Image (cartoon, rainbow, N blue to C red):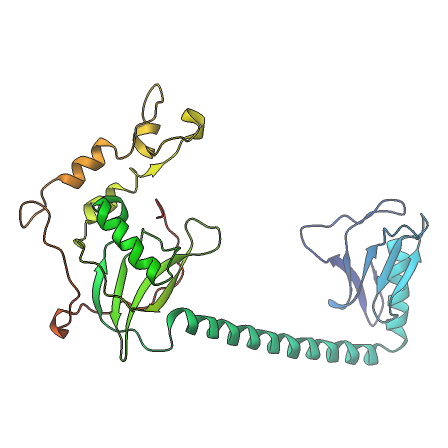
Length: 303
């Protein structure tokens, strides 16, 4: 804009995405006013109904709030002249305001951190994680027997766990003074974002088959249940992969043939489905503890 022997005045958009300078009769975006690359004020278009046309530019800075200017440059000059009268005093005032703002921001951040830590303690418990003594594999709600899935859902409900992600392992940890149920719980309205939640285990887990099926987990990345509103108005559960690859497109009901074949295939180490697992009490049976998880991004199906 302009330069002198002692200072250089310039402007830059308050938001880098918006840089329309406007004109006497056209609104423009907010700009900061800089002296020697330091923000000392700013200008903006005033669209209030009681401001007459041709006087809609306003500024803020060393001169305070100044309104009813014809152009942006006119509004800026008011602040520049006020700054030039005693720049050292203005600089000290600006620096003091910045220190106060930084101190307030530090206090706000400390308060936010303390509240977040308190919420985390409520969600995860104040005690340290312990060894896992029971675990239900991920995706059990899709490949487990129907009665077992219903039993697990009832057990979770008894612990007031109603938004548990079925795509994650559900486990019980033995901590110093209690057993806890550790789950990944859906966050907000998202179908993928989760956060770890821990509650005291007050009821032993149901005696269901807890054999992991990593082969089915890999399959379920593609073959998972969903609905197709554009085909049948979403009236029935269908396999995502099989329906998408059908030509002409038609709904392939869930469970699809590839999933059923993989689910019912004999597993290595014995014929048929293995015996049901029970809660392990002996320390020699404990598996290494998994750290309390942070938020995950998921793919596939939620329970």
